[in-house]
Every structure is written in C-alpha cells, then in structure tokens.
Image (cartoon, rainbow, N blue to C red; front, side):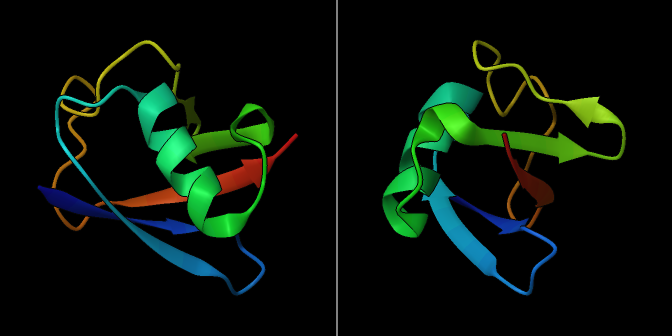
Length: 73
C-alpha cells in the first residue's frame, strides 16, 4: 500500500491509500469517494503532465508520499 496526496489548490489536501498496480482511473474512483465529486470530472496533473486513466501509478513513477495536483473539469 502506498499513500498519495492530492492538492486541489483551494486549500484541500486529500490523502488516498492505494496500490502501485492501480490505474489512474482506479485512483480517481478512490479519490472521488473521499471528496464527493464524480471521478469523470477529476483531472490529475504533475507539472505539465496530465495523467491518462489506463496507465498505472507504477508506470508514472508515483510512489509513497507523492504529491499530485487535482483539477476539476
């Protein structure tokens, strides 16, 4: 299990526990349960990279303690 922190730039920081083998889509679903927003409206970024739903956290080199930027569409 790893713990990834998401920051929505509005002062909300959410910590999500997941597996490195989870896809970004699975991670968005876990995140949406905690924040109460549809997973389809969530966009995850790091720098200028927008993460695609079908790629795993491990492939994006997201590890325990990583920080992601959370945006809404």
